[in-house]
Image 1 (cartoon, rainbow, N blue to C red):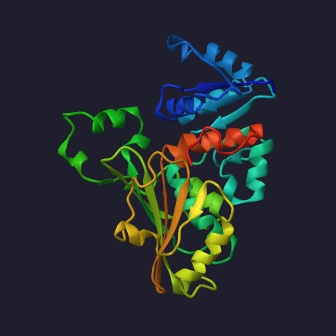
Image 2: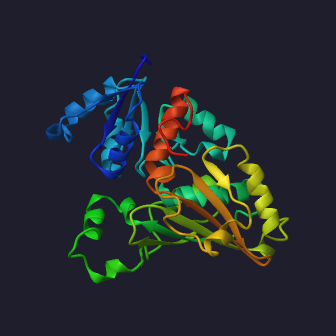
Length: 317
């Protein structure tokens, strides 16, 4: 790569694309290749910029992301895709380097990197180590629920929530994906190694950004677990030394009135893990920003690994 890495953001006017763009402010190692706004859907201009770049970020709907990959002719171009399109595809590195040395190595050496989904990030951060370390059986009937700010739903939903004429039901949290077909389920199952997709209830709430993902578990259905201390000890060791993932002390939430706020990590690019409950029933929770570790922050972290610079360069930790 050249002294300055040439970056193209395909889909730079969406929420994730704009946040990626903002994170490059002040970086002297990046040269941004910009597309004229009237040409942003022009396939020939997009193709030219993709192949001129060292790294292209795809911040597009799934079909458009797949089309963008088909335009690549330069074998040296690295694609970092923030869509759902390629997260479980062979040949694509899954952009969650904290899961294992193998995941990080695949990102470092990969030409095709898929950024995890926001809810999937929270779920996988909890369930992957539980299965990998033998505490959670792969055939456990896992359920999960998540709270999220409305910014992760895209520009149209953001505009609807911020409209003075919005419906009254926007004032309350709203459960969705009621048919159990949320687009993150596929990666939740594959990356963690679960035998079945989890039962998942996502809830969109009337605040801008931040999320909490929670997984309740029965202790007597786990392996080698007598209570919360055993799970905490394993997760604390699993993520030891990580910059972006922090396992909080067992009494950490006590200072917050024994509550976890969905917006508690808004504006921060890391992820906090809480282990709560009792010796019979445990709840694993991850708290992070859906626009941070759940989207654009994770994309920038993957770029930094590819470039060999500090993982948190341009990020807020």
